Length: 177
Image 1 (cartoon, rainbow, N blue to C red):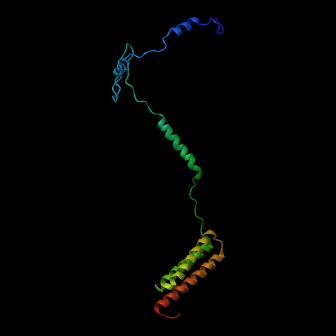
Image 2: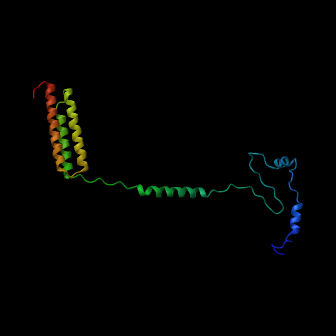
Image 3: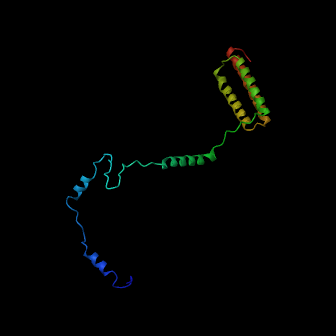
C-alpha cells in the first residue's frame, strides 16, 4: 500500500466521514467550568496530592534577566557616551604679551579708582565705548596671544579712557581744561 495507491486508507477516510460535523457545547458547561476555577483575586492554594505525587505551592519565578538587562543597558550607555567625553584640558600658560596686558589693566583700574568719580552725563557714552573697545582688544589678545599690535592698541585705549575720565572729573568740578 503506497500513497499513490487509490485504495490508500479507506478505513481512515470512512471513520473521518462518520464523525459528526459539529459538536454542541453542553448547556451547563460554562457553569461547571466557572465552578471549578478559583475565585478571581485569590492566591493559588496548595494543590491536592494525587497518589505518590507531592504537590508544591507555586513559587514566584526569579527574574534573572532584570539585572543582566540593566547591566547591558548601562554598558551600552557608557559605550555610546565615551567617544564624546574628553578630559578637561589644562589652560595654556599666558604669554608675555598677555602678562603685560594684565599688568597694564591692573594699573589702569588703580588709576581710574584714584580719580574722582562722577561727571557730566554727556561724557558717559564715550567712556562706555572706550570700555567696550578695551574688552574687545583683550578678547582678541586671548584668541591671538602673539599679536604685539594689540598690546599697543590696548595701551592707547587705556590712555584715552584715563584722559577722558580726568576731563569729565574736571568738568564736574567746574574747572576748565
